[in-house]
Length: 439
Image 1: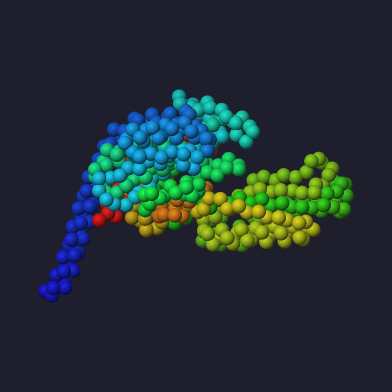
Image 2 (image 1 turned 45 degrees about the horizontal axis):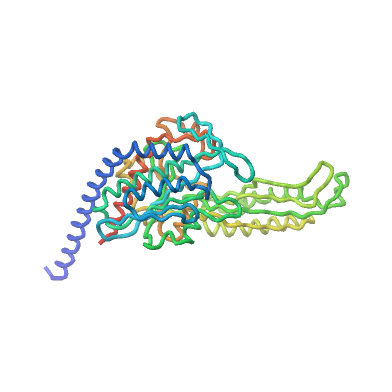
C-alpha cells in the first residue's frame, strides 16, 4: 500500500471515529437534558404563570426585565441590563473552548384584554396611545421567557461539559416599539448585542397555539415574511357633493387605487416563487356627507418572503398608485417604510440542526411547513449571523387547529406541557452545535 493511501485511510478512520464519539457524547447529553427538563419543569410553569399574570407592553418591560436579571445572576452569570431600553443579556462560559451560541426570547405583551378562564389570568390595565387598555401575553412571549430561563438552568448545570459560550438574549418590543420610539431586535443589534463576545449563530423559537403539543414546525430559508408599512396620500379638489364634476374626488380615486394594488398581487407577482400580500388596513377622509373632501389617506401593510420580490412590489405600488391618481386628476404621494426583514433560516445551519430536533421530539414530530406571512424581528439577528427559528406546539393534543384561538386575541391559550419540548430544543441545539463546531 502506498504511504499516501495509508495516510488518507488513517484520516478517514480518525474522522469517522471522532464523529462517532461526538454522536455518542451528544446522545448522552440529550439524556441529561431530558432528565434535567423534567426536574426544572415545575419551575418553568411557575415562571410562565408569573409573567402571564404580570405582562408589560413594549419598551415598558421594567419589572419583567428585573425578574429575569435577578434569576440569571442567581445562576452565577454575567448580566447586562438596559439594552434597547429594557433588554437583558446574560453570558455563560462553558468549561471548554468553542463557538458562541445566541439564544433569544422576546418578553413584551400586547394591548389585549384577556378573556381566558385561567387562575393566573391577567387583569392588568394601562394606557396605550391615549386609550385605557388591558394587557395580555396574547402571543406566548411569557412561555418564551420561561423556556429560555429553563434552558439557562440546564446549561448552567452542564457548564463544565459545554464547548463554547452561550449568550442569553431577552429582547423587548418584538411587537413593535410605540410610535416615536426605537426598540426591539433592530435596536439591540445597533447597540452591539451580538458582539463582545461575537455570536456565531443564534436560535429562537415561537410557541404556536394552533400546533399540537410535542410537534415542531420549521422551514429553511424564508419562513416568515418581511413586513413593510405604506401610506398613500391622495390629494384631490374639494367641492360640493351635489356637483362632483367641479372637483376631484380623492375617495373614488382611493377606491381605484385599492383595486389596482390587488392587481399587483394577482397579475404582476410570480406567486409560485413566494407568497406576497398587500392589505389596506385604514382609510381616512372627509368630514360630512355632502362635501367631497380635498384629501384621503390610506395606510396598509406589505408582506413578502423574497427580497427581490419585495423591491419589485414596492416599485409597483408607487407606479400603480401615482398613475391611477394621474388618470383621475389627483396628486398621489406614496411613502413606504421598511419594517421587519424576512425571517430567513440559514439553509446550512437548518440542515445541521434539524437532526437534533428529530432526536429530541421524534422524527415524525418535526414537520417541514409552509412559510407564513406573519413577521418576526428575529430577522434582524439573522441579517447579522446565521440563525434558525422554529415553531413549538402549544395546542392541546387532539384539538382541531381551527378550534384554537389565534395569536393576538383575547382567548389565546397555550397548553403548558408544550414548553417541555421548547426547553429541550434550546438546550439540545446549543449542546449539539457546540460539539459539531468545536475543535
